[in-house]
Image (cartoon, rainbow, N blue to C red; front, side, top):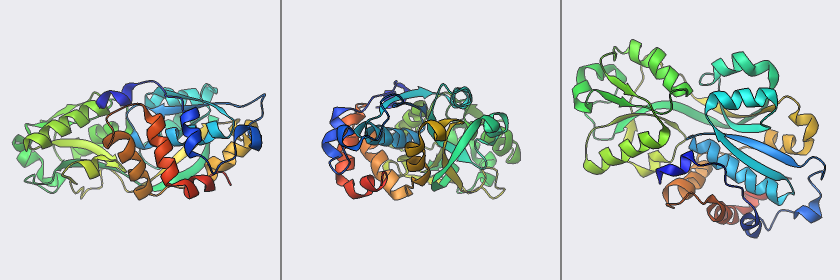
Length: 296
């Protein structure tokens, strides 16, 4: 199950067409200019909300006549690739806090197409029966968690927030902060909750883990993880000129957390496969009216 987050892109083709009955076919709509219909969407490794949104738009754009490629990469290479035009767009830029440092470096060379979800938040989660409810109490109870905080990718904004703000603010320097990948973190979370053991992980909302595991967020009284953020679509600087129709669709795209959870659950929790094509197609069929509205 975990390997799905490290795979390359899965192009959605004919399988999505069966479900996208309400959308015009490529031949009927003429949406994509034949001379300029190739779109490369960059996807952050291990960030489920971005994977879900990217796979959804892969299906929609393919049905509209575009030739879509999903390319998975870590956060820093995605921003760099957008700035050089190697990537056309990405759906997982968290603002104003998580990815602020990348915007400082690349913001003048990329375009913000707007937030499609305004309910994102960085979190630190524990099993729901853990002996503490606040980060303020963690240092005194570190032994209960094996003196370990299980993190995600080293280059993630969440990782930086934990290293630069959470750990020094709450005096957690004596705890081991493990970083490797989101799948590795989820594997640790699965093993600990299955065994009824205490565990502490870095996480974020929206994420399907909150539906799949008995976990709770630790309170952050000092605000070290920031407040709720927006998940933005960013594109290369010339994207709106090259793909005005798609840029308009992306700019108008809105998806609330409950709808996102349902797609994430179908892709990452209810099905033990990394073949997303039939899963996304079935989800689209169940939400056809909403999907159709995204390109109207």
